[in-house]
Length: 296
Ligand code: RIB
Image (tube, helix red, strand yellow):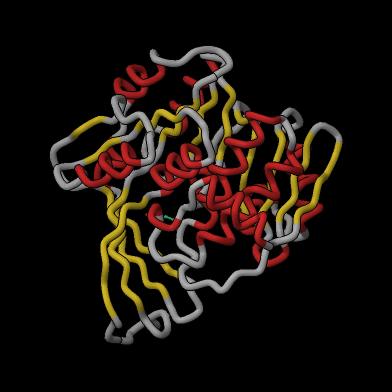
C-alpha cells in the first residue's frame, strides 16, 4: 500500500513577537526565520518520519528547491512534484510568547494545480492505496473525484476551512481528521459528541478523528469511540502540531489497525513538536517519539 499526500508546499516566514499584532497596530518582531512548511509538506514529513512509504504531489515555484530537499531528507518520494515558473506558496506566520500563531497564506504554485497534472499523478496509484488531502491547493474537487474513481482510500484534513470546502461533495472521504472548529463548520454543531454524530449522519461510511486541543482527541468508527488525553508540554511554537498529529496517526493506524495506539503515538509526537520552532523542522523522528514515551 502506497500513501500519496497531495498538498501544499510553503516557505514559512516566521516572525517571533511578544503578542500577535492587532488591527491598525505596528509592532517590532524579536526575529525572523524562514522554514519549510505547508500543511501538505508537513504531513508528508510526519508520515515518513512515522515510518510510512510516502509520495508527495504538489507544485513548487522558482524559489521552491529547499522544499524538495527537505522532503527528500525525510525520505519522501518527490519525483511526482511539478516544477512551475513563478513564485512558490508562502506565508507570514507570527508566533507569540505562548507559542500560539497566526498565519497569512499566499497560494502561489499551490493554487496552480490543474486537472492534467492530477491525471498524471493518479496514474501512479491503484485501488487500495491511500491519499491524504488538506485544503491548501487548487483542484480539490477533481482530486476527490479522481481518487474515488481509482477506488483509493481518501483521508481528508479539511484545513484551512473555507466556504467552498463547506459545500464540496465529500462523499468520497473514508476518514476525516479535523479539529473542533472544522468539525463545527461541517456539521453546525459545537459539542464534540454531536460533531462526531453529525459527521456520521452525513458520511456514514467514514471514520473520524476529532482533535480537541488541550482536551485531547477522539476516534469514532467501527461502532466505537476511543478517547485520548493530550500530553502536557511547554509550547514554544504550535505551528504544524496538527500536521504532526495527522501524519503520525494515519501512518500508524493504517499500518496497525489499532486506533488507540495510533492516537497515543500521535499525541506524543505533537507534544514534542510544540516544544520546537518551525513547521517541518519541529516534527520528531519515530525513535524520538518512542524514547520520549519510554522516559515519561
Ligand atoms: O499547519 C501549519 C502550516 O500551515 C504552516 O507550515 C504554513 O505553511 C501553513 O500552511
